[in-house]
Length: 198
Ligand code: GRF
Image 1 (cartoon, rainbow, N blue to C red):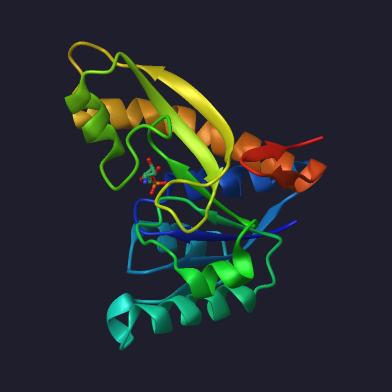
Image 2 (image 1 turned 90 degrees about the vertical axis):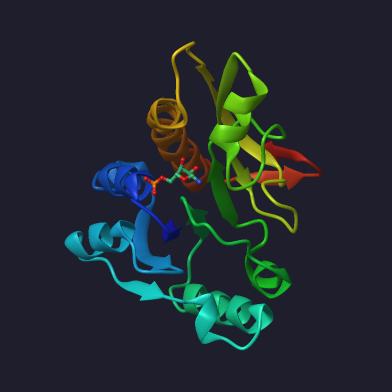
């Protein structure tokens, strides 16, 4: 399967996918990496010899035009799956018209708890004892689509946001690599809110 990965940050989830895909038995390979800004994730793609693109919101008159341009960038690489791996932008209707049901996102909390840009901070502030990470299909909501996989991570008494996020990210990379590999190798069906992988 062909993967396009979208990033905005350090790209450690992208790196985990690149490392897994080095084995042909993984069943998926990263054919392009896109970003909404310059970021370390792009450097990782370049180091792996993978084509990159940058699509900045501020270069477009409206968010709809950006959304449409992003969809065209992604479509140019004819992906089977798109992985939003720390991509800090909400995609809109024009993107989803082409890639709904084929775009997965990873989130550092156990959805539907703590959606949004501060899932780790919000979980910590709430005082939960267990949090984790979720990989799900992207739909029109924020961190809202059908759930593919989750991992639990215990909160420690002395955790701050960065220590907890680091432990979540360890679980997250493993979860993402496993989930994307299964979707790519085994195929899947989305029935309502349920994702069925044979
Ligand atoms: C991940 O925890 C992702 O869920 C969150 O930001 C982090 C991205 O990390 N939204 P990286 O860029 O893959 O290292």
